[in-house]
Structures are given as C-alpha cells and as structure tokens.
Image 1 (tube, rainbow, N blue to C red):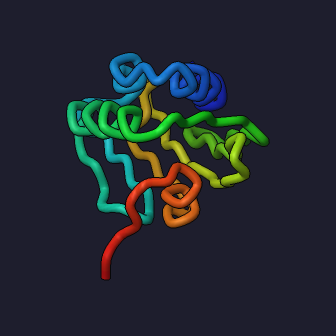
Image 2 (image 1 turned 90 degrees about the vertical axis):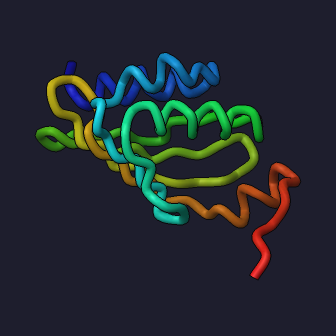
Image 3 (image 1 turned 135 degrees about the horizontal axis):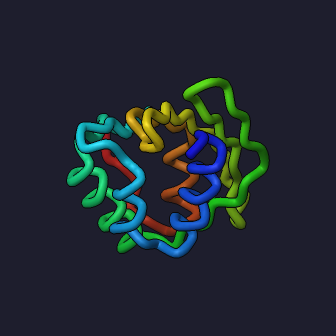
Length: 119
C-alpha cells in the first residue's frame, strides 16, 4: 500500500478510536514521536498510547491535505475544535516505521478541559 493510501486508512481508523487496528498499521519497532512528548517506541507501546489517548479525550482528525513523496506521507489536519497540526509518516513495506507530529498540546488540553502541566 502506498503511503498516502495508508494514511487515509489511518485517519479513518483514528476517527473510530480503534487503537488495536491503528497499531496494526505500524512496524513492530516503529517510533511515534509527537514533538511535544517523548517518543513512543514499538508497536505495543504505540497501541497503549492510543488506548490511553482515546480514553482521555474524544478526538477527530479532519484531513486538510495529504502529500506523498517516495516512502513518506505528510498529513495536514485539523479538528472540529479548531486545533491544527501536521504529521510526517515514513512508510516501509506498507507499515509506518516512523511518525513525527507537530501540534499545540496546551491548546489541546484547554479545549478538552484536561489538566494543564505543572512547572
């Protein structure tokens, strides 16, 4: 599966909050690095990350753009509350090997009325 096709499926699955199926899109030793958090390493840890996130907030990803360049897909997204972000996905053999995401965590926490980090 080409990177752009996989990321479209990833978004559809993300929007159903199906952590198990989302995890299946990743290589066993994949890395998911949302730059405002520590990297998550390994398919099982990525699965648990999604379980925890879906239990914390109702999240929806609306595709604004998806670009493909070789083994990479770039997703520009928004959510219904106005948050925007982008993700870079390195896809090898039809699976996500590396993902990096950029979005404003503080705005996300405020929008979902979640506790803010303490300094």
